[in-house]
Image 1 (cartoon, rainbow, N blue to C red):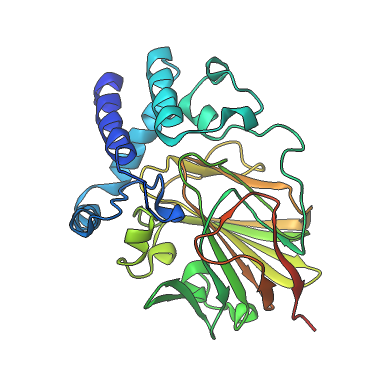
Image 2: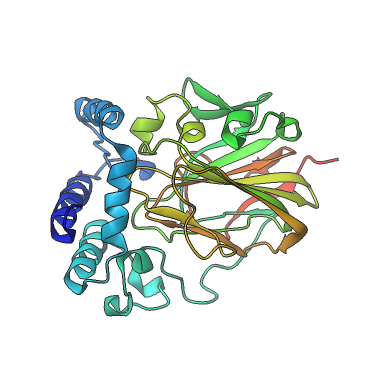
Length: 316
């Protein structure tokens, strides 16, 4: 087993490489993305090829080891690197004192000051981040990037996803500087949750434009709701060096590589804006709706949790 010091050096190299990528002139969804090389297509292609070769899960476990370390110099080093390199706004955090966070994970999944994100709209944003894609579901096909679609059935790991046929979707990317908790976009009854094991590709724009079925192949946690306006699914998608996905009803992250199906009887009433889970490191949140809505945002727009994404629905 490698030592904490050696692991931290490896992870530090990865973080510094990701953080050193220039963001001037980059699209918002590329800013701060792991492996983003805006303006350098050859570097992006190299990064994508490397993802097929590296041991994705081993790397993520090593990152998890460092991120959960309570060794003061380790956690302080990584917190300072992220804050400095990604211009993290600590004035929004419940605690702006970096010493208050016992681990890097605690810092990364930090809470916001109460009342900082008012909830509005028929559909509110589940997270802080950047809209990488949104629109109508065409039959059972969701847009990943230009020229690339994936199926609802594969994303939800379900043979029957008929309720979302010709519905609506939105995909929000969370960069390292963002608030990393995901909240309920529409009040409703939570029926089930499924942790689906998978790959751990990066989810930045370059990878999304090159890796087929990216979000449907990566590990993810799928939540199914019944709402006043029909069925809704909220999907938390893991990615490279994401150390885990954790929900309020489970004390520990879901075990990597193990399918975990949860059925809630009775169903759980989850209010709009209520917390659904957190990423230990960052990734992507996807919302699927049974009926079409008129999105108030578009691709590459920056959004904040609780912001109105849609004001009305085409539900009968």
